[in-house]
Amino acid sequence: MNYKIYRELIIQFNYPQQFNMNNDSRKSAYERNKGLLLIKDKEYYEKNKEVIEEYNKNKKEKASKRNSEKVVCKCGAVISRGGKSRHEKTKKHLAYLEIKKN
Image (cartoon, rainbow, N blue to C red; front, top):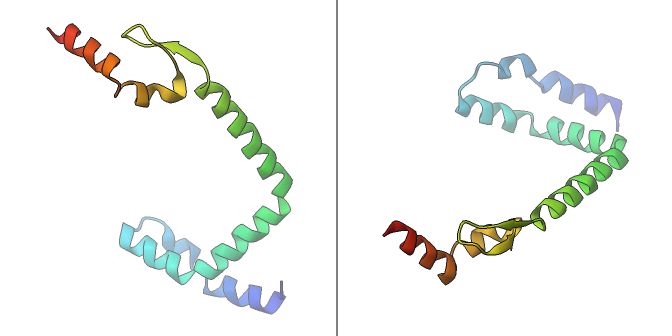
């Protein structure tokens, strides 16, 4: 990156003013400094690309493992943890809730 452009962007960046602001001021501060923030984010990603990708890969594997874990529902069905929301809408589960309610 060109040093002069980077220096001008830093001069435009009013970081201390971003503290203790209401939401509208934060949005306007972000809009004023959007270019610099995007450049900083891009530079950070380029410097730490391998670390970020490894972190995301590990996070995805961990979530996949957790979601495929088998659990027993209140209604007695064995389901995967990731499919719990879908299962709770099934006729079997809703029928169990009706029986339990009465």
